[in-house]
Length: 251
Ligand code: PTJ
Image 1 (cartoon, protein in one colour):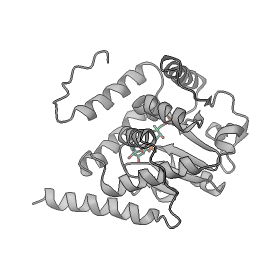
Image 2: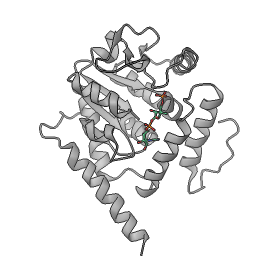
Image 3: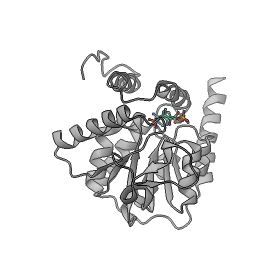
């Protein structure tokens, strides 16, 4: 990757690589002005999680995969940070699962939308992926939301029954749940409103989740969604993990 000098043996290689991906995406006009602030908040939680997938997050990831595989009409919603950090892996996942992706951003400008859509189209053509990329021509609105962030596509987010939303904001997550959808959230902050609102919240770093979902889909791990999945129990497991990390670091 151009301009990225860190050695793979560096203990924080993965974290540095993610920062570099965000820097490149910012230069290409793909990110919101506050994207790096949001990422920094995520990094702080990731540090407390030991920068690894904890068991409850792995379980939530497998539940999310089961939900995506068993949906009638699943979609992956992509914002600036998600595309910068794991655009390739999420496109590969969508291609394997034969579901569309939809670019749907909080800070919507025509310039950002076209930079993000062009980036995904390039990933698609360079890797010969079979994915429908939605978001360019929204023709529906998420009820209960004001402004451009309500815009979505009828054949994507609007009609979906299961939606994967990496780094969603609390309001939109709530609005999607109110539409009756199964909302799969990725958020390193187990205390966030989206984490609490989600049907299945994966408290893990987005690029690790994308990779775990992709590996699961490639290994053709198929299971039915659990009938008694308890999101709050999984959030509590993440909080307990963080608390135990803090008390052991204090010793
Ligand atoms: O591209 P846009 O316009 O849709 O804007 C995207 C951002 C992320 C800027 C926007 O959605 C935003 O401001 O997000 P928030 O409200 O700051 O929320 C970001 C949440 O994601 C926080 O709870 C962070 O802890 C979490 N987070 C940040 N980076 C990661 C993360 N969770 C998982 N993986 C990450 N890499």
